[in-house]
Amino acid sequence: MSSADPGAHPSAGPGADPGADPGANFPDARAPGPGSPARTVPSVPPSRRFLWAEVGLVLGLSLGQSAAYSVVSLLDKATRAPLAGQTTTLNNSLNPREYFDLAYQLLDIFFALVPVVLVFFLLRQVPGGNPFRRLGLDARRPWRDAGLGVGLFAAMGAGTLGVYAAGRALGVTTAIVPAALDPYWWTVPVLLLSAVRHGILEEVIVVGYLFERLPRLGWGTWQVLVASAVLRGSYHLYQGVGPFLGNFAMGLVFGWVYLKTRRVMPLVIAHALLDAAGFVGFALFGPAIGLGT
Image (cartoon, rainbow, N blue to C red; front, side):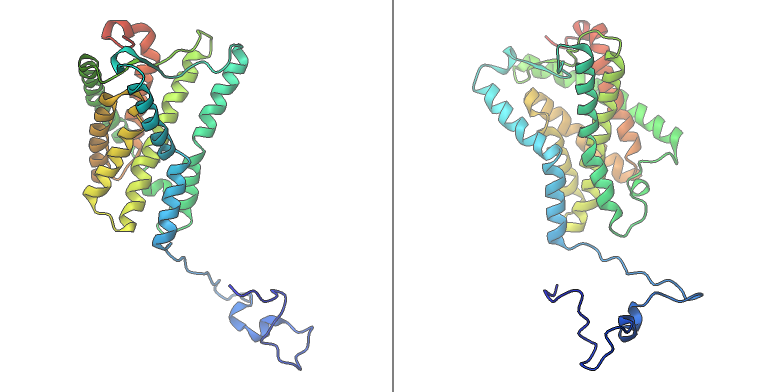
């Protein structure tokens, strides 16, 4: 970009009328007249350097950051005491006063979804159409998405419990308490919102966004699939090695489903149902199925 004065018009010669319309010297820059077709500037695909920077920023503001903290958390726990003797608590109370706790919980959910808004904003800037439609996060196929989501929930739910039990038996997974909120009137709604938050955040970024961006950087299908699954497992490492392996496997399945359907919506539904069952169902069924022990 030139550093010249943006107010100057160098094409106007020494004898040019300073009050003349500068567009006269640049016919293509003038506004189209009545009846003339509107001219649009063609969208230019972003460069590889820009895409790498974009991916780094999106992950650095969201799940990449979570993965980094999770790795450090696992190292801290592993060097402190055996993992089997430690507990990981999800959905903690954020304030001892009821309505301040509610305010903090809602703010936490809201700001966690800002990176998702950023993703759709960035996808909107490049050719390819409506980003919600491109990632399949819309209501075009509600029954098919719901059916597939419920099926994935059933399959992944059984697998999750099995991996957790195995990890606890082998001593490589901490005890997990899915919810530790005080029993207020808003506890269940907040836990449900938290489940939806996790479903949207993780599936839009780890699946939809990365499967959209990494191929543009020259990555092959299997590279994208494995990288997405590794990232998913990595930000669960704070719970132990078992959750990493379980979420890695889940990532492979979800990634494969996305490749077949090109729709994030069923993945969001399945993920939200998994978390809702874990968060809300913990108080009723946790002790019976061994969660938190």
